[in-house]
Amino acid sequence: MPPHVRGMIVMVTAMMFLPLLDAIGKWLATVDSLPPATISFSRFFVQSLLTLVIILGMSGIKGLSTHNLTGNLIRGALMGLGSLCFFAAVKYMPLADAIAIFFVEPLLLTLLSAFILKEDVGWRRLTAVVVGFIGTLIVIQPSWELFGWVSLLPLGTAACFAVYLIMNRKYGVADSPMVMQFYAGVGGTAFSALVLMAGEILGHTDMRFGLPTIGLSWGLLLAMGAIATVGHLLVVQAFRLAPASVLAPFQYFEIVMAVLIGLIVFNEFPTPSKWLGIFIIAGSGIYVFMRERSRTQEAKTLA
Image (cartoon, rainbow, N blue to C red; front, top):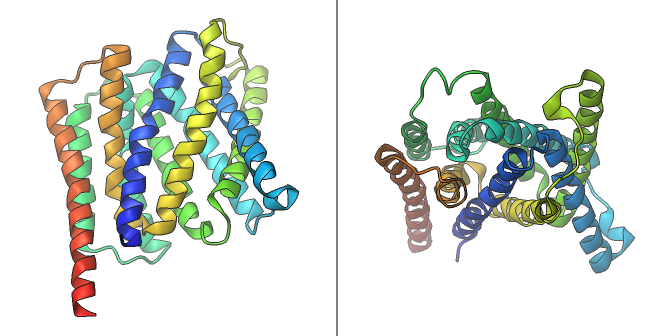
């Protein structure tokens, strides 16, 4: 199977997996009233410990060497900021709506991949991303209420994640996915710790440190770190296999899982128009998949 096609499959798998992280964050913020900054800190702290144990067990201390320490720490800080924005958003709005706003990100990613990575982004790929974004607008059903200050938080997450994925593509050649995730976890932990300290000084409720009051929450905090580690390892691997512009539309599959989780866990039942948007989103990813496979087969025939 060609690398591009394998990359797309890995990306879809990651996008079906990562919404569990968002759902747990929403549950902790709404049911146990944990501050979003505490949730973000715990997510990265557990990720750092988990990847550290795996690396030391597999390769020893030498396994921690990296060719891009600063870059990987910046990746983590970006994810820390993005996670904080998103966990704060889902505290106040439905999970599927927050992810729908976030999905301006594949369009940003496709544009950045052309300008920064100099990837060849044809009109068909760009059209597929735009069509997928139209699907997200149908899902979210924009209103003045939703596009208040809270709706800006997922947009902040989108910007952070787009740059993070570009850096995955840039640095993924030199370092292993596990090493990249370890240092991203360290960067995210450090950033979240700074936010917690600022929150204590400023007295901002969402930025302060808090402890779970429900026993289940302790296990969910640990689960978040594990899910984040596995999910983002898949994302890093996908970007090692395929160009960012090829993978961008497949991020829309995350909203499919988010809607299902919202229905099952939070009783947020999608309207018919939202289902229409989901089908459009999925269709854009399927089109890019079929298009890329067709191009690969044509290249083999001509070779």
